Amino acid sequence: MTTTFVLVTGAWHGGWAWRPVAQELRAAGCRVLAPTLPGMHDGEDPTAHTLDDVIDYVARLAEDADLHDVTLVGHSWGGYVIAGAAPKMAARLRKVVFWSAFVPAEGHPLYDEIPPSYQDMFDRLVQESGNNTVAMPYDVWQSAFINDASEDVARVTHSLLLPHPFQYFSQPVAPLDANALGIPASYVISSEDISMPPGEYGFHRFAERLGVSPLMTPGSHEVCFTQPASLAEAFLKA
Image 1 (cartoon, rainbow, N blue to C red):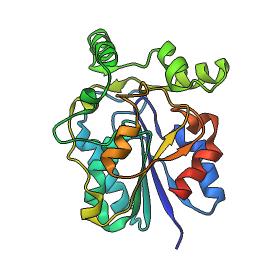
Image 2 (image 1 turned 90 degrees about the horizontal axis):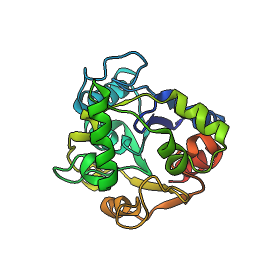
Image 3 (image 1 turned 120 degrees about the vertical axis):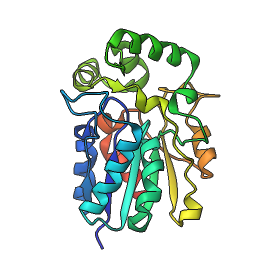
Image 4 (image 1 turned 180 degrees about the horizontal axis):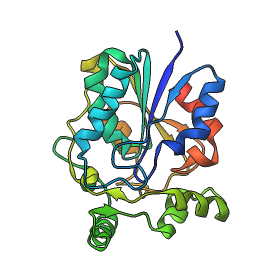
């Protein structure tokens, strides 16, 4: 049976961000779906949906397409989405993979899991936005998210990002009990990922929360752009 991947983006991205990785997975014989999530289409009202709407959208995608043997992958903020969607589509899942992703804790939205400096930045950007969104500042993108890319790549990719609905950062999701669902769970970390400061706020804490040892892969938080072949290989191994 062909393995099907459903790839869920992190904040500020659309499904387009997965294309380099999707091409690698398809070359390995996999089927790949990489949806742009509600509220993340260019020109769409960013206040129109809740995080529950996004979670339901991913679950319905699997049902509407009658997907089976699915590997559900979530990147960064997308960890909240896959944690919420997995129980709704458990019978269709082969495994879940968190890539440098947040793993929800009871009662805690993503906003609670980021350093105070990021919280202050989010608060300021939401106030400035006029539509309850957080835009990604270029200096943060270049220095902390895509720090393994050339200046040209950093600028082009940044130009494609959309402001992210703040309500997606401020709503909690129930913790994922993969064992209770009978679904294997894996955690992948990019070795040069400094989008979350190493140490107290680093991504290793989420692998521990999930109860697994992380699989390391080269590159930054945005290695989907810079080293897609290595990331696809990690997803196949995870």
